[in-house]
Length: 198
Image (tube, rainbow, N blue to C red; front, side, top):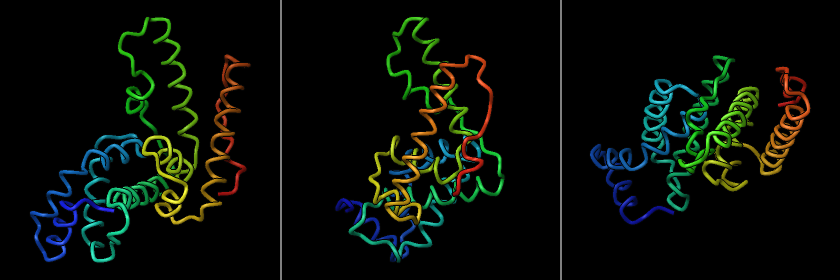
């Protein structure tokens, strides 16, 4: 559902009021940019992707269902675009800088704890860069944006069982790699997804 204010802006935007759409962009530019940054790992690319997502949303406004959350719909468009970009370049990077606030919420941690958390963040960074784009999108939408299975399915044009399968596979692979790292300090890079069916 949309708020009354959003509904008014959407109605005005549908009538060609660019100022009304600009208000929607201002309201949601941060979450859209953050999703793009987590997906693409590059600030400049994320800015371009966010602009493209808002442009695509503007072009598709007449197809928007007001019974659906506007931000969910908008993030779905952004996620699809980022997946397309990742597929095009075939090499993805996931900036760990975008995760620091999530993994280091307490600015007063001691140096030993901070070092351990930094190492864990680096390991997670390495693991996430190896995931196929749709799996990474599912993980980001679930754990950073609290999307439900159905919302992820809608966002990525998948079935709910496919979403559950992707999330399960991704969590299992992350857990296995973490265990492997604990057992083998000299962690060898390898991609557990190479033999997985997308």
